[in-house]
Structures are given as C-alpha cells and as structure tokens.
Length: 230
Image 1 (cartoon, rainbow, N blue to C red):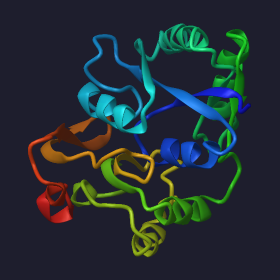
Image 2 (image 1 turned 180 degrees about the horizontal axis):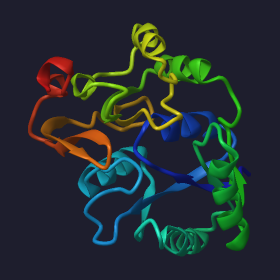
Image 3 (image 1 turned 180 degrees about the vertical axis):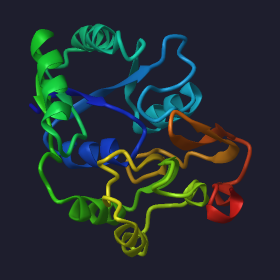
C-alpha cells in the first residue's frame, strides 16, 4: 500500500507540480492551506478561501485550513498538521525548490507532529520545473508580481513556454523563486473540472501588485481570464 499523505497547498504551480510528481507514490488524501487570522485570504498567495476550496474539491481532497499571522504561522501550521494525522496521514508533500530556510520549516514542523516531510521538487533547475509544469497540461495564471521587477500588465497571464524568454530578459527566475511572482492553478489534469474565474480589482500591497481572482461558476469554461481580460 502507498503511504497516506497530505499536500501543502498554496493554490499555485509548485504545489500542483509536487502533487503531480507524487500521486504515483503516495495516497494523497488531504490538502493543507494556511490563511490569515480571519480566514479571508491565503497566507502565501493572497487567494480567497472559496477559490482555494474550489481547487481542493476538484482534486478530490479533504481541505484542512490553518490560520494565523506571520508571527503565529508555525503554531497555526502545526495545528493543521495535527488535524491531518487524524486522517491516517504519515507524510506531507511540499513544493519547495530552493533556500535552506524554506526546507527547514516544513522539516521542523513535520518532525514535531510525527510526520515525514517530502520535497519532490527540491534542488532541481527552475527552468526545467517550469517546462515540466507546462508539459503536465495544467493552466496557471499569474496573480501576484513584485513591484519594480514585473509590471502589473503580467497579472492574469497564463504560464507558457514562450514566457521563458521574457522572464530571462527581465532577470526573473523561471519559477519566481526569489518572490518575483505567484500563480493560481485554474485547470489541470488532476482537476475533476475547470476552475472558472474572473478578474477582480488590482491592488498594490506590501511591495506587490496583486490580482483579486473571483470564483464564477456561472461563466462557460472559455470565459477563463486571460491577459486580454485583465
């Protein structure tokens, strides 16, 4: 039998690619997402909870939410991990790629809760990972860009292989590993159906431009937001 696992789910491309790589080796049954104190936004990508819930439903996973400020993040995350243990989970899958500090946290909190940390993407070239994500057939849209590095005109754009040359010209890591951009996955082979979204307001907050992605189950699949719709 495959080990029972949970997925650390940000809603973006790296989480999805980590899942894509792991489903053959693990029985993934839950997704863990951290939200701010009042639960109104996801901590990592600033997504609305209904958008993240819709993603997790399409993955067929139980959604376990943690809450907290950045100061109380570890406490909130450990509480969420404690909940997934009740589902028989023994491993937790993360989408970290680089920086020792990024790996130290999940290893520490998992060990504290008696769980095994799994990092399927760790240390691999980010250009290769970008290409692998696109090759899965998943569709991710840019929802956050670092002010001064990427203009707000990038918000809403889908990740494509053609984008790599543009990122390189700007000196941007292909996977945004230095905080240059974040994404939301709106369609993927592991989703039971498309996630239909529409663009909301664009705001600048804490040094980043962000697109407020709104869930709209009423629009047809072809109504997915694209660069022209932002």
